Length: 357
Image (cartoon, rainbow, N blue to C red; front, side, top):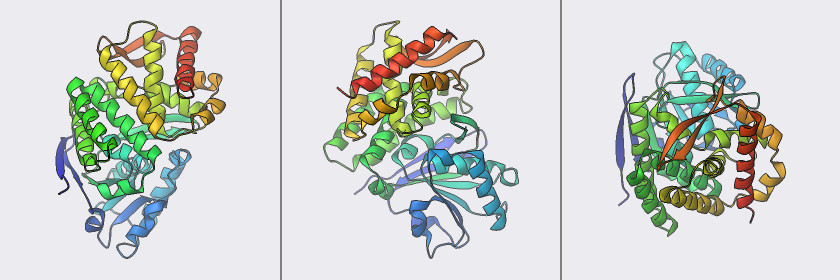
């Protein structure tokens, strides 16, 4: 029998539940529900509700203009404070839904059904939204958790190897950031999964979300411990921007983890667990089937350095990065100068080159 799990998360506003199981989405949609969904899943709601807002969930759609379009449709559908708002999709749908739910009528309740493994393992917990401004990644957003998260494992069947890899990279990063035991537990489930035991998806999701729950409850607003979950993101976001989002976000984070570790290696020796992590990251990237030769052709160091320097985690004087140090992760600052930028782009170039050997 398939595993079933439930996790309770305490936010500053209320407690909400994450339910993990199968064949759940059809049970939760009512006739009057308002659904914001990835356009690929629109057909699921035929006969259940006619109040469906469909979005093509590209990175270029994750902006304030799309949010305004959704808000306008919600007004036209006569959504009110008592309406049953449900979001069904991956990270782009989640970011847009979080933002509009928080701002429509100064905030209405919403429920989230993540459909990507990355959202199931990571972003569904914590209530953070991020929208892009022009080609700059995640510059605006807010914190507004859903009233409930329902993870329907049936959606995993819709995912490609790239989608699976993207999710696994976010999950393994979270568990590594939490502690060695969490990382080793995730790795154990991952190894079982790669041997064909698909029932391990439930265990993998539960392990990752249990680790993420600790960060969210300890530091909901991302000002202290939760910042460690940005490991790989400063480099990864810059890679996405510099290649016009050619590489999916989760894979970019994996490349960013490698680049951040290469960068950090210029200042210290790597530890055994980090080397183990890098081996797992490399294996996941390889198994994803992404064509890294295309990334080599698209990578522009100048664009990378521009995007890297404008990351929102930096301050006026320093570059602020999450780097491995002394068997742990730390927030480390470097003075803003061209040498650091060149070292960062060189590290990313080495990360890309390592995938093309």
